Length: 160
Image (tube, rainbow, N blue to C red; front, side, top):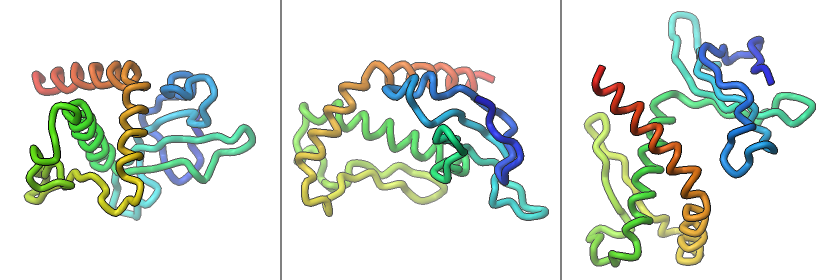
């Protein structure tokens, strides 16, 4: 399906037919495309690039389509990878191995730090941690394939 070009987000680089490879939703996803383009919040003289997930309901482009600045997409990737590391280590370590638990890590960015923490305010956190872990295990192959591809591309970028 073609991504619309007449809306406020102006696609420059696109991945159409994303619904065919959208993880477990492949073949039945409403996420029809991804794009990198000129952000919808741009003002004259102030242009930003954003990433967008394009959702289509079957009748119209959804207002649930998401647009994010590139740094947020990368920050989400950092959060995902750090979370994966936590869940892989989880059964080998205890909370004593995390002296600042529920904070798992502080990742330096822009002279500050991104905290990665278990959500202590969640009343059902223990059960939700188990469910989260179960989902990660179920999608291990899908996630692993994408991480290996990302790793190769990052190594290539680092070499250039």
